[in-house]
Image: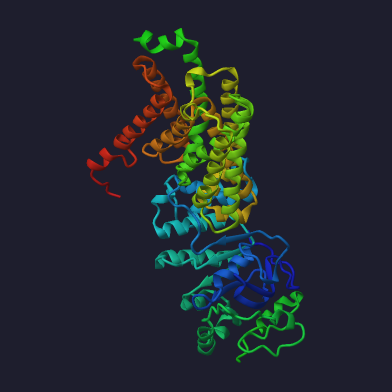
Length: 289
Length: 288
């Protein structure tokens, strides 16, 4: 049922434009001056050391935390996003059956009152797609870690969103489960959905993700995976990843932004790529300092 | 035997009124208690009942022992505390129990101050243990109205409320309903406590809300089982408590709460879902 990857103007449905984006906590940036476009229908891995801002970026896109500066634009505006957090706030002891957990994904269609019954086949198909046939009436508390992650993927399927964000979806999950879930992600990509996943396993990224954003608070490199995951880039990301400076001075880069780049040292040359030229984002890869 | 069981209710109208009042409360309070228990907020009711007291006392000071005035005062104090605590919890990183504790203590101290300023001897014992055996028409209307509003409200809020309990982050992302649902639920909690303690005393109001709810955890594994069972347990406790009180000449409120307590202890021992006896005599494991 592939989504049409319509426009070639870079405004393809499901695109996410990041403009001078700074996200963080308590004024301290965790993602610093990120500029670029996640093209609609792309399959992007976000890679970087711990504390590099991968989760923060995803939270920013989904709207969980406000931008400190800059903006995020989803295309078309307000396009639904399905998000799988790294450590969600799910209370797994709550007496809920697996089917009802997956059914939460139907909220956008059903709201608080419409009946679930006509949509049962959608739920059963989603459970089948993640290999949880026969689990529908099990209390969710009885699922193993991998099974639970499968159930959450079933909920993502049911949400049927054009943009899907996954925050370290394979942490604590065995090889078989990872492989099954990776196949699902591949299918989403084939359907023209935009998938952004924060990941640690570089082999996985090289094997399955065409594009990669290497992040170390600053964007280090962004483009085709092979050209991003070079030893030099990875070393630079590692070196950049430290430092929460309690007394860091106020950053004026955002304001200098439009005048020039004299402050640009360890980061991507975040040239003023207009959103309309999003298809050029592959040119937008790291400039070695 | 039939006479023994039905006699008190056939013979005395105050017993019938007590039964009707308790059954009404049994319809509304236990389902609220189930959600509170699942949110790990069982003890919140105790705090809330303290938060309500000053409001009711203020109403008493202004208008004497008048049901509307005390209800209004209690509702105001309770809602203020619940909403402020809810607001702080949603807007800061503070956990709900901590913010609730802060506000209920402020409310309670303010209430005590208010009462002592007037130098009046409010019959606090009356408020604590209520007067199940003296339910008049307005009190019954109040309890019936609360039960109606609660059941309709829970039905309307059910889906988002469950989602708010299970995965608040998910609900935040797909909908803006989380905040209003949270506040509406706190409103229902306060309403049930106020109604309950006016008619039956805080002990009974809290007891009928929490004890049956906790007992169901030993029997049912999903809400479809927990909610109706909690109502059934509360009704049984009301009936047993009233019979006990009548035949053994015991105070009614404590008798009903102790009956609910017995149901809880029985469930704790015998319940199939993690009951103690079941844990002692473990059956052999299955093949798969």
